[in-house]
Length: 69
Image (tube, rainbow, N blue to C red):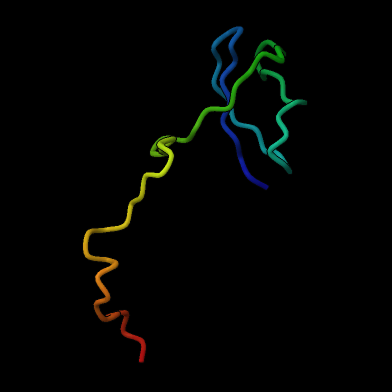
């Protein structure tokens, strides 16, 4: 099951929650029990739509050097 990070809009506490699905409607703040929470993206995540992280030259059609024959 994935672990999601949340931030409470009421008290500001940041907390983690293990959920079996991405449905956050039943999640409340672990400190003040407020349902006014939002999901926080993990550090290093990018919310830029369409951005890629393919290294330059990766699509040039070069040979694979993975060591497998």
